[in-house]
Length: 315
Image 1 (cartoon, rainbow, N blue to C red):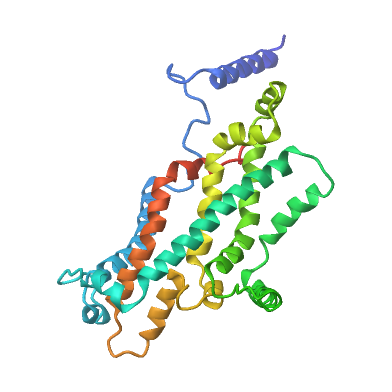
Image 2: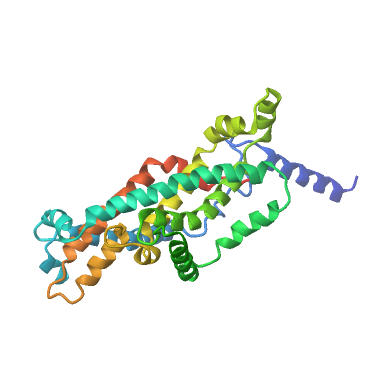
């Protein structure tokens, strides 16, 4: 063996030992240096602080404005000189906020429950069974996500009007008509979320259940449903937010008695544009009240959201 081969062998052995040596024994891998950090630590802290401030300043402005007087808010005062809860009391008489909250909770809640329930069963059939047109349906679900809702506003309105003319059943202006509208848009997304989630569940559980004589319905309700709660919660929350935040369809498809809370806020803001002193304080208080159910929903189901959103990301 030449000197070159001897040196090469020793270098290879040293490199192999340094790579395979376990941590915690005084040995450090050559690539253990912090090369994965994109930014220096001080610059990373600055960037995070800027992002937090960018989010916190507007939110705090709304919170402070909701406990401040209308004149002070109109004057541009950020931090209130005198705290008051009068805005939270007046919003219930100034605008029909209570009725709007009830309509939104009933409509969005029904859409969330129905969408999640239908998505689980539909996704189970699409994932576990093979039939003609299965891939076409899956591709169609994905393609439907790229269609803007504004393009479907007029077709949906015309279809509901024709149904009402033919059957005499009024759809436009009712809560269940708005429910059907939201379900049309929420169901494809919820189904795709559940398809992704169910693909990650092991088939061995279903095979073991079939050996014991379980039917497809039993497998779905007794095995897959308890394991699919993260995905179900994600699909239900996104369906709920679709109905809660929508303004376009709820403006056209509702009457003053069936308006959702998003439309109520829009009407409140539009009505104050020509006023001498707009009721900014009440508008911000109403915004805080309308945001509380969504924030509470996220806080309650936070642990399910993390598992549901990351489902299918690692194969």
